[in-house]
Amino acid sequence: MLRCRNRTDFLLTTAIPTSTRRRRWTYADYCKIPPDRYRHEIIDGRHFVSPAPSSYHQKLSLRLAGEFLELVERRGLGEVFPAPFDVHLGRGTVVQPDLVVVTAKNRSLVGETKLAGVPDLLVEILSPSRRDYDCRIKRRKYERAGVREYWIVDPEVPCVEQYVLRAGRYGLAVLRTESIRLRVLRRVEIDLKRVW
Image (cartoon, rainbow, N blue to C red; front, side):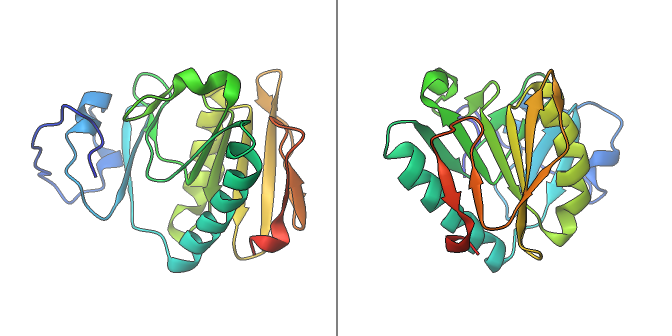
């Protein structure tokens, strides 16, 4: 997968978790990472690497993407992007959420190789190795960046924690198990029983 159009060869020189490095990563550094089976992200200049997700994680992602495709994209309400898709949230932060929803009025954020700016809705599906990362680190970053709506999908329960930005802060999560109405597109309601 080519992350950036003008990428050059880059050799990883250490097996140490890259998030412990002292230097701050940039988007240019990110563009030099060679394709592999891992998910690479940069948050506030720190490099994070995660293993490929499980087959059930991918099935949930596909089913949820199908619902978004039918209810959002085909109705002309916006666009939906599954991972891997780069979301550049500003200097020192590039993430690859499981699903990205951009409403029609914000389509200009979508470029050929990345989304540059703040999308309307980001969805993360929990994996055992990424639980703290998605629930704490990424949630705080999305809140600070101004992502209007953030979902954390927990396959084990199963449920969706829905966070909505109000006055620059995420309120308490609302837990959804059977259906969920998007706050950024109030006409859209997803039957979660079709996802689980």
